[in-house]
Image 1 (cartoon, rainbow, N blue to C red):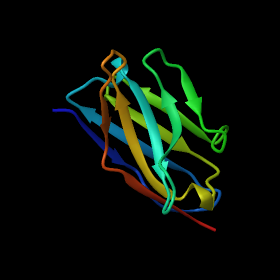
Image 2: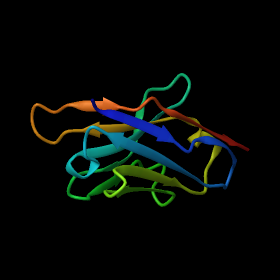
Image 3: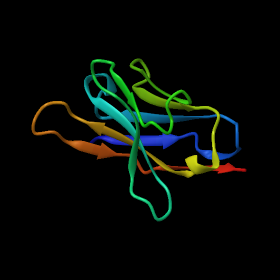
Image 4: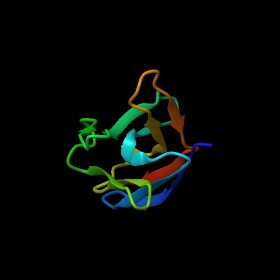
Length: 118
């Protein structure tokens, strides 16, 4: 059974930092495409950062230079290091895993709340 468990969310002041973790079980993060998404109240879920199985990364324009996605294969965990946080970064952050082979399968974590105060 595949399970993704996020942690590390919380309340932080603007300009601060947080590191989100996504621990996977039942599947290897190193073989799959990983992503962090976020959803703010009243808005659609959006891709924040992605890391594919070839270690290519991609970031939303709004977080480039501030967020970094990484992976620790030994811990089977993906991270999202967030720095210089802004109030507009406030959202529920979700970890996503997609298998690279067709038919692709997607798995989601339960989400972790990040709140940035001004």
